[in-house]
Image 1 (cartoon, helix red, strand yellow):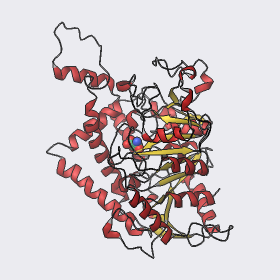
Image 2: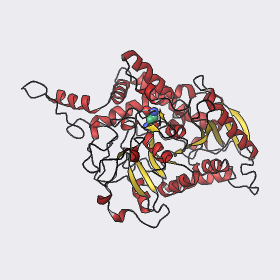
Image 3: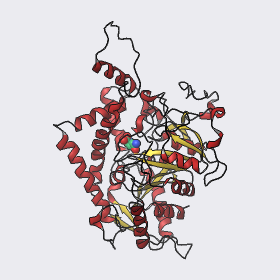
Image 4: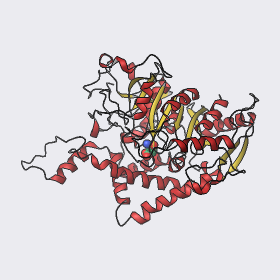
Length: 491
Ligand code: GLN
């Protein structure tokens, strides 16, 4: 497949082996690549790095968001996180495929076709950062920059058997990330080792005044102090690096949709934690079951507002379809034609849902209600975590009987098959299919609503189908180092 067939600024990929899993949709023309951009020193010197197609690069590669709407959009500026990676020598190898504008869980909603799972090409890579996960799993990239609004880094990481970090909201600059739902969007990382994630995270974890939701340095510092006061990250005894750690197992993260085959690797992970000295504590996060509905209302509402700018006049694809009429189109018909042909079906579904949630009739019952649920989801987490949430002044006391991290299955099942996701489906089935896809996110959206860091780690293979299974570790805001410490102790 010639994934770059539309791009003037890139070489067509003649050899399908180069992009066998369709992980990339824009690959730089080596000759055109400015030499000075790849430094031969720095913490990430020479690391092949892939960038999700919704992050702006100023290297001439399109930032298409895998949408026909922006298929030839070339950004005049670069995302802050990418600049930081380049400053440490990272070598950008290409822009990765994803679900259009980050909307989806299987990476089948892309104008450039589905991404295949390198572990089994009959299966999807997961979404929306499917290309990012596949690039790391297939070995063409050492680290991948993705985005996670409600699970888009963690879910494909779990399906592809790699590590995927959704950082605390506000730590990594969103400048240069094309907005899907601003209050939830984060820039995340994927890699084959926790050490690589840790190092790349330390490079991009910096205050940026260009991002209005970036958290100040003193609050970042306060979070690290709160964590160190509560949890001992290093233990004198190397054999028991998790001595004293309290690990919460949330009851609600085992819903009826959860496939049994994910449980073997999870049990194994929990046993290793116990061997390393951790204590397992059952906990309850009762608002988990309403989190998914709240997420889809909030994410769609924000998306409908963000995507309003793509009208083919100010930004985006302009339709050339012949209307068959001599009369010029009126303003609204013109915009409607551009948007109808520029957006794919999943994006249209979100715009309709979000626009409805924001109408005067539905606002109180849907949008405001979802915001209330979001607050309750935050309360749930703060109620069980021992480290205090430095962003919330009222919960300033440390809970001695709380837990340090939460551990649960990362996804409800292993990667679904590509053909099942792509079946030609009639209207009614399409509805069902969409709902099924949304269920995939039930375990990832609560920490997105609460803005907490969550790391998906590869935990082994499912016994029956041999596909990778991920386990998720979630901690208090700003406690990424704790996640890395725990993940490292399991390797
Ligand atoms: N699958 C979720 C959605 O479609 C999450 C996507 C994401 O995190 N970007 O909204």
